[in-house]
Length: 317
Image (cartoon, rainbow, N blue to C red):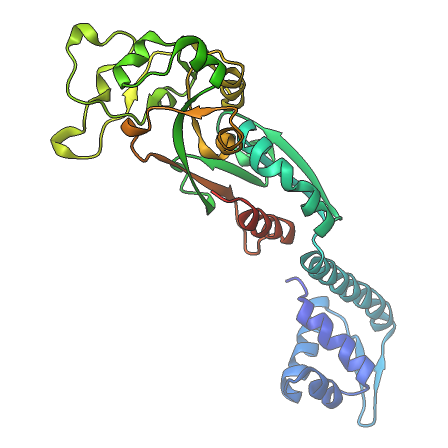
């Protein structure tokens, strides 16, 4: 049977205190409890560590050697605990954060100077993936997920939600005109995602049903909701596709066509006039939830916790 740290602590305390009674008082235990722990340790080691007399305790030769090693073990444990405590008070170490490139560029990267000033001992590694990554396989500490969460084994902290808007550049609208109705989109160049397919369903409602011959490049799913419920999104067939929302944004900014993008990446473009919202009368309120996901063991590492707190206070969705 292996020796426990409690038994090592009792043994060292008995020697340092000079008696079992004094050690019991120091440890807040009973005299009998300390005596039994010392006896149990000697039985496990199958050797006497202390010679007990009526007047004092004396270490045996084996006890002398064991005391030195016991002190080293207890000191190492104390240092390890203190190291963890220091990290929680002043987080340090590598922190790997993954997010889709639009969220990384517009919502995380602009705040990382301030984060590094607050936590200079954290070494940030920022990665961008347009698809969902496996946190363990990619050794990611925190991943930002946009949309409904699927993996129930992960812990999550909600960061908010971002509304979708249909936009185009002033240059595109000047050249091609602004569509005033949803049906008019078939006459325009639409910018969409190569995957996943659901991102090419825009939150637009149509006025009245369309005939099958008028569907054109717009799917049938843009009609009102079934039985008066929430409208179904409009399935579009893009003229050009890309895997990254940031690429779609750049295409829209360059005047290539019309895109449907989240507020978190185009709010500044709309405010500064680089992009113009269109079809607002037909747009229903569709929001993409945004959450930070992570694995959590018995104790969440301080650097992960401080990042979650920091980004949660900075990201305004």
